[in-house]
Length: 448
Image (cartoon, rainbow, N blue to C red; front, side, top):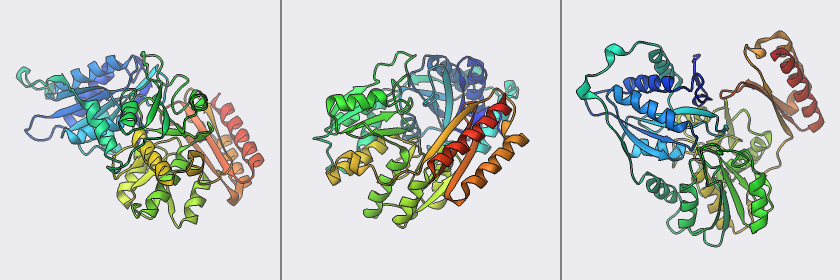
């Protein structure tokens, strides 16, 4: 089912440019409010955001949209995406909204929705919202006495901090661990360092001075060089990098080496299997996860189910098939015993619990398998469908034949940016590199 402006993770684009305009946010608020109006009770929505300058514009436009159709609005301020999902359920609201473009630079922004159960909306519901956005809703507006109200909610950050802390055993303490936390100048800049400190860790904070422009700028989970340097400088036991809305996490070990989401899922899977907490006899990941993870899980007698890219597709498969661990190589880790979406802080706490239990360095705890050589290249395009061109299809078929059974090839259009992602992996690193470069070259020519 094709959608017009919803992508793999809500609506996203450059701020003040279609579809991320105030007018669109107003219409989306009206449409989503009408879709979730069901029954005669007073309907409510919670809205959180990250620290982008454009968040003020989008937030106010959404408030206008929701209140205009009779929905009351609870404003949470800067808060991680998973916190918004949690509070949607906790406050028994009809809908949750997060204003964020996740790991993208400040120029971009986005709108993510959560249903009353705290889960992201299905493609079908998003399509319904899109249809209403393009409809004249004047006849469906309530009278002046039935407009919604808006108010700020105090204590939302403290509620999330306590929620995160309770995901660890009551007796668990992080005392003795020196932790560097990089909050990407984003939504978790207050809650993540506070939660770690309250759990007993010696906390050194980075990326906690947002100014509206510096979210994800040379910091966070997509840019870990500064974190690695800081871990070396202060001789920390671990570095934790969140992204702009804190729904993903990347770890840096005591040597400054990066540990990606595949390794983190392996850590949690093995730990939970040993304690009989792992459901589904395996985990769920996407087509982008490394073949090395799949082989490691097989050695444990566990399966790896793969989905299309996007953490909501991972969650859908988890819910449908009884898994409680899933995620993406990029650091979206979904632990459904605790959360309905990726939660960078909670995933980091589970890793820290493993480090404490095993009393070993992070470099040993978090290196569960040797990744198969994997290369990803992004090719930017301005329009059209390069993947439908004959020369591109032919190049992809040739690459698959060259890799054979010893590797994998994944070619896809990004759901959040105008990019074609070309990924290949296999045991022969030189062959993988040649295949990726050849296909990327053909895609680039076709895109031009």
